[in-house]
Length: 269
Length: 221
Image (cartoon, rainbow over all chains, first blue to last red):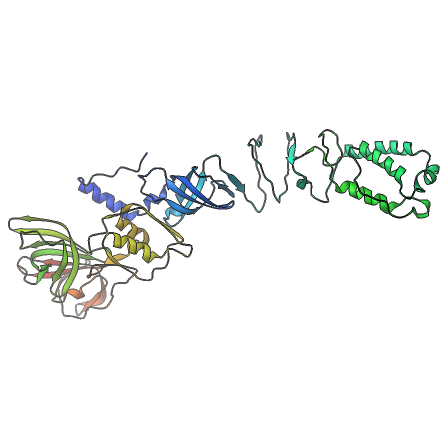
């Protein structure tokens, strides 16, 4: 629908009355919401400005340049693409304050910015697009009943020092530890069987089997024992370094089925 | 018949000139002229000269009556839609100056400043832009220049005049004077019979076809 049809000048009384009204409400035009078409986009979220033109050329408003993008949703901004339709309003009905409050349902990029917590309350949250949903510099918290499935994430999501250890993983480690002890034979023979070897190769081979059974595919490559056993005992610094290296590799459960050290139920992205 | 009033040199037989505090002055006059009249000119009454434009005119029975409005008759004309943007602020004087020049008006913006980093001008009569940015506080001065942000003179009227009538109920004075130029809205008057200062709100100059002239002044409030 076009703008309100003006009366003809033939009706002098009505024309005079309308002039009086418009004189009292000179910014009446700017109280509306207008549909514009995006002609160009500048910047990136959250600092996006848009060049746009009215889709209805009878609305008596000009094309606009570098108009700030504001979303109708609090804290949300979008980066539309050329050809998108957008909504232009004027804050407080002021012709010096044009802003864009929304666009088509699909935009190039969108962002919700909050210094505190941004909550989404819904029965189901879906990511159905072919693109990427990006969570950066924030904590993703899933709470409540019905949370299931998996979250695709890249290795960066695991951080550098944190680990996820499930109860199942710990129990699994202890069970497999008993197999390790069993394979090592009587403790009285360990010094001669394992620890007299400066490279601890036999012992570390058993440890490799143990960790593999715990769901960790393999020991890290390149860990070399340093120095002879101390007093005929275990070269603890070397073993400790191996364990640290193992945990530092952030090995996920690649199958998504075996609870383990690392990131259970996470899939590599 | 008035021998001291004319419009663009043509003698004015009678008329009424209304000069408000804000907005533009309007004059309905009758001239001893049946030919077409100049579209613009100076309406002169004694020592008062007002630059105006013919808004409407027609002749009848050997005389011509016309409505004259202050300025150059442009504010009613449309301007095109236009968008302004300046990160340092869009000057008020620029927006108003553009609108005025596009419709042939002259404007003086006192103070000014900026209207913000954006201004969106709609396609509308130019006077709407004026009202959007200046509100109702503008007026057309005797030289035809639209004044924005300027204050009318509040000086007391010191020339000779005679109060022939006063209506306290209507807040109106009828004045006889030869110094019409001093009787502008905003000016103040006192006299031996009016001992409190009266500020003029609106002035009407009535030219009788018997050669008389009187000022009717409404005072505020």
